Length: 166
Image 1 (cartoon, rainbow, N blue to C red):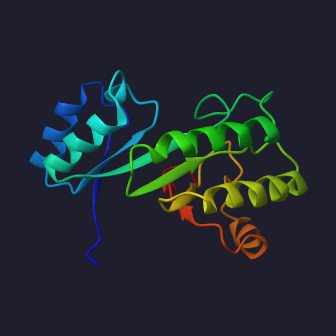
Image 2 (image 1 turned 90 degrees about the horizontal axis):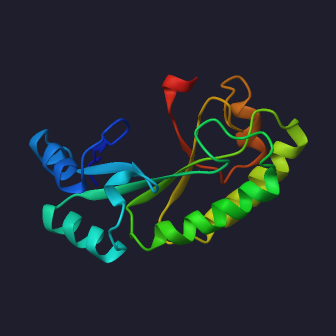
């Protein structure tokens, strides 16, 4: 299978039709957007699927727990896991090619990180679409020097490498 190149909607402020036109104009194979991105606002999942399918574009959905890209420290592992479970269910309705998750907090001790990631990976395993976890500042996978240890502990963990945050 040939690799697909998707257009990130990070920073894009237009509507879905405009995003599709931009992606097609620049030769992208799909779009990547946060589940909460304004391009999806007011649209039913079926309508989003239909428009993307008609345009011949794939969809990668990004999920963010903890309130925002930098998590609220009061949102602990239990709350973020509940958010992840709900967001995974919502994302399934869009039938994405894959899902990328930004989750956890770099403020948690290592043992809590491991328990959290174990449960997050279990939740991801129930998804119809492949799920990977993004390397992101302020999150559980923030540290490039520790990622080998994390992957040894959680061999089923799949990564989305956001190298700009390492």
